[in-house]
Image 1: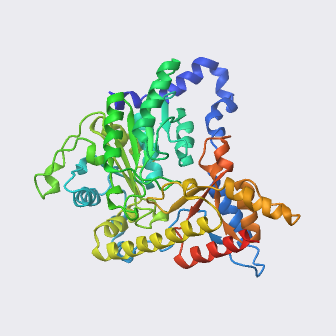
Image 2: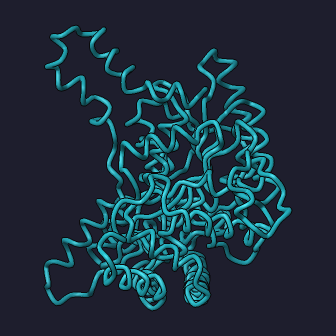
Image 3: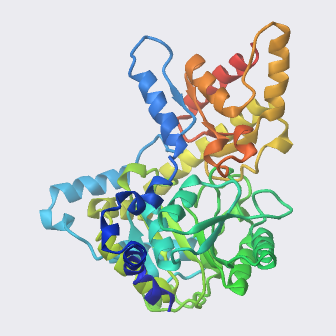
Length: 469
């Protein structure tokens, strides 16, 4: 029934405007733009814009090195580029609209991907929707699952677009509370938050959005943690959206490469033929899983991802896709299919993941040398980020500088501005990832090591030399 209710949200919103203000309210542009006006900027893009402005000076100074953006530097794998060229040289009709759910061959390949990657876990290809990047997948998931006014939980430290998307859709964003293991205790935090809201007489949570591996922390769930999270969400009647954009990028402990699809109630694999499960049913109330070709597959600008929908929301997701974007770009889907199925692409992309791993080690070592204790660094299990609290290290540096009669940054926003102007290294302050006004935002910082290995090493060298002044 949830998907039936969602089809009326636009009408509901229109009725609320008309009922509240009458026909005269039709001209009240301010009230109609209220939610959009309250959406905050994505600060990492503001940092990128400032860095680009410095690059545009062409002043002969050091080139800007980018540790602020989570964008792989290598571009799409060669197999994807070759498939795109072939499609561009072929019949023009081949690049027309695809079904709203996406190319059937790409969806079947994603089913085979889950079977291979997760030990026989079957995701029916009929439940897979190809989306215009994981960002569009997130919008589709939230629009299909939630009503205006619904309370939706997010991690206290999280990707800011979760909060902003929920705000735009008229939902209440609820930071999760509790948990014994920072950044990794999703099930315990979900239980604690649900209990706290019940005790306070607040509206119960309708959903929760969590990621593994997560941006900005890099933290990834273990299999036990993911199983507990999926079971807890189902028990509490909370819709889980599992953002798995960084799937395939975990380091050291391969057991951290998990997916909510393993616990969604899919039928066990009993055949090598994925087609046999085209109409297989998951248990109702299961997770929505969001995936992407942007990160592991290095296809950011191609804007292609996917969404795995539980059966009761499947039709709503398709109808929303039909109306909001029709389909993901056909050329991008063709390229994504090659990136997913080519053995050569896998070798190429795994080599890049190895480079990320080496850069990760360099970031962690540099932070330690400038005085950041390991206890102040989030579990950098995966993705290509290190997230750290620099407050103690900043105070120590400021004290050292004060002896010399000079001042030094005491918060990460000021630090990021100083590093960009003085060393031409771009970084993102924690204010982008913490709740607005939360004090942690000015203490924490995200380092992205998604760029070329040599650039990351040079950027870290510049930071360390500046820090030791």
